[in-house]
Length: 389
Image: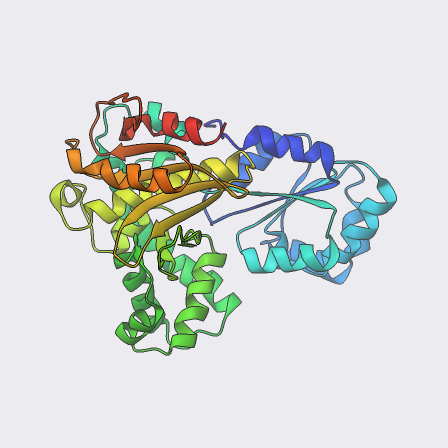
């Protein structure tokens, strides 16, 4: 098993809460992580129909089988269990008794908020971070990483990414979308997902997206919420401190895995990301996802935003802690550092109280400048360390 950065925090949560819940997209490695971290606990999958039937029809009898607790995989499949879990852990008093996993944010969080509020330590697990698996493919180029992405099955076995992504999308549409909302026209939903991928790293115009897909604005908003709940996309919100300027109010749309975004956008080979039109957006998707993974794996409280004023001046990523701006980051997919990359960061830093500023670019060689260090893509972990310390 490849060690996960989230493992120490998961174990830490089990010292403070009677129940620990871990949620994230399908195939992100949740089950592998919890079975390794809590190897002494019985493992039960509530995807199994016979097990789920017992849990829903006789919750007390089901829980009585696990006097020392257990891991319940896909716990949102048995929502009837949550109220009985509350009674059980309140009477028992031990910490780290039960571990829940779930790949549907709506279902799991609804059960937690209704029955288990205050009793659950929550961790969101995304696919591998680059630093977790970089050593496994030391000779891969940037384009190889962007096209393959970071889902564990694509690194556990040598399956071609285009085959795995096709199966993943079909399984996701079949299993999750139909459970969460009534999508009558799966072809329209499929087209909607492809259109979203083509817009990764861009300002989100929901009305234009809906029009391009032939659906209503409300339907587009609902479907986007499903993608968010399944940990496939993120709406990155703008940083609102205006510094006397008019700012955009629209969020930016990002997929949380560059490989999935690239495949959905029609990229079938890493060579298409060498100079193709999707190179910049997919690289930016990679950087934003890595920052989000570090924040969630470490249970950090910093928030992520972007900044854009009415004149079109933009900073790709802003890290804030409370009211303070911690760092301003520009993502540049080019392989050669250009002099004009630095001025926007300097202007923003002068407005925002001189936070850390840095550039992450598509080249290999770092440039450790005193005011705005430049990190090659392989050194993204060093940029993360500077922001989350």
